[in-house]
Image 1 (cartoon, rainbow, N blue to C red):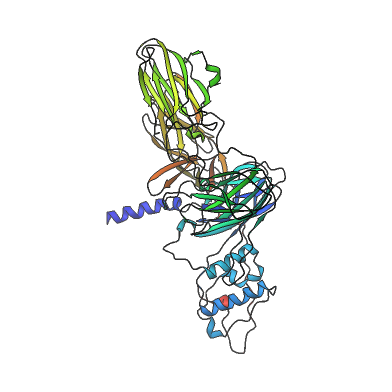
Image 2: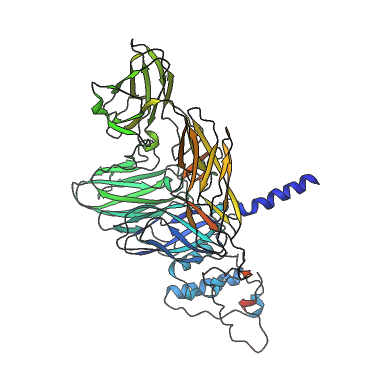
Amino acid sequence: MKKISLFCMVLILALPVMAIPYAGYLYPAGVKAGSTVRVLIGGQNLGGITGGIISGKGVRVVRAVVIPHFPLPDGSQRAWLYKWIAGIEKGNKEKPPFPAPEKLEGWRKCDWWLKLDQLEPLELMLVIRNLHVRRNPLQQTPSLRQLLIIDVQADADAAPGMRELRIYGRRGVSAPKLFFVDKCDHYQEPPYVAPHHPRPDTPVVKSVPAVVNGQIMPGETDSFIVKLEADTKYSFALTGRKFQPFIGDAVPGHFQPVLQIFDPDGKAIAFADDEYFMPDPVLRFKSGKAGDYLLKIRDNLYRGREDFVYRVQMEKGFKRYRLSEKALFDFDEIAEKETKGRKLYIGRPLVISGAIEKSGEKDVFFFKGSKNMKFQATVTARFNGSPLDAELTLYAPDGKVLAKMDDTPKTVNVGENLQQIDPELNFTLPADGIYKIVISDLNKAAGKDFRYWLKLGTVEPDFNVYTVRSMCNISPGGSGSVKALVERTGGFAGEITVTGDRRYVPQQTVKAKDNEYNIRLRNPERRMTPPRNITIYAEAVINGRVVRKKVIPADIFNQAFAYDHLLPAEYFCIGTRGGWNRNKKKKFNKPAVKAPAKPASPAKPAAPAKTPAAVKK
């Protein structure tokens, strides 16, 4: 009995977490500046969503429409719906007469089915698709089952680039999903059409630059016709896996998209299934004659599901994508070419930026070392999107190899990379003298993209703190907590003080050596409000000085049933969860999404008859 009670208590405590709104995918995942787009969201706990927030300026969510649950209609109700839809498709929106009263007995209730003539095209398409595509509940993904439509509006001067979009409502705010703003035209794959209807024409991209959007369903290959100029270089960069880097219930745990281009004669001229180690491919090719080229997009294993969303950015020229130009180290930085013939002084940490451009190339650096110096060399390459598989070798003043390092896994798995292969070498130097550190590619691969940032210095205690959710949903005037992971490096084991805006973050202490902590938070609001961005700080005393850092907001995801990854977010959100307004002593107003109007009852016959408004649920 005690075990059952304990289980019920754990379940009750977990309910607020389970009820967090979850957006599994956005389709399309972008908008052209100066336009408005309707975005379909698949997710979980989407009831009561009232709006959304988008990072950056000039882009906003202007409306939210929650898609109702569609029950399974019986034969006569289905036939009646088909008849009305057929009339609407022919331009006649008049509702068909209801069948005899005895045939209404098994009809199910759905507000949208009674106002098909008022639905917008996307909403009507969802009704049609549901009537024709019966899904097996055992094969459905529960986290993608609910649907929501939001309208996103972008100003003409909205800056192009990647944003983060969150939805919110009475359950609070969701984790972010990536969303793009572009200056060029957008094209989408054709919408769903019912069986026995003419297949829609293949979309035609009239000019480049452009962006095409789509979703890959099981066994599907999407096609676009692209009008290209003669003898011109092009880059087609697909973003797909990046929208959902880690999928917990699929192997290998992410979308593996493929791009292929065919010339006007139908000949395949280019193919790409990745970009170095990154699953999202970049297709670079030079066109032949001017004309209509056919672009095909699919999953490498012919899998598919609703969150296999993609966008393909088409540009002229051979472009480089996804390689960061920014070092992760906040120290002085010099170029590798400036170190030639120099003996570096590393009393203060120094960052060297360079690239392994030729096969078998080794970049060599000399530095002054002293006996018993705790030397450290750290490489950032793969973490920044570089294909370099770096290897470090340390040589003594007499030329003897002292240490060699390849991969160095981190204690906290952060970022999209599937492999932690950036090396960190730690070594206590045996004597005074001039030492040599060499960086090379383990596989002898090379190129201009094989960039690296090498930090040289002494071992220094340090730390980072990551949250496992980038939001916390709290009732007005209430409190909550979010779990945080502490990454300790360089032997740091001291206490850490968590601080921030006192209205939201009471000061608290992470005990020495602790690697996990639940950060306590407050919601000072007294009513339902949109989410608030807050900054949480972590402070510690290291070598007699106070080190203050931002707590890095992140969301934890599982890959293929096995591995946990933290994906950093732009900001941390406090969301307001529905409850009682303590000032007015009444419940909060319902979401601003309008409920469908009840239709008028059909004309009554001589004998009393039931109408669809009274059918059973």
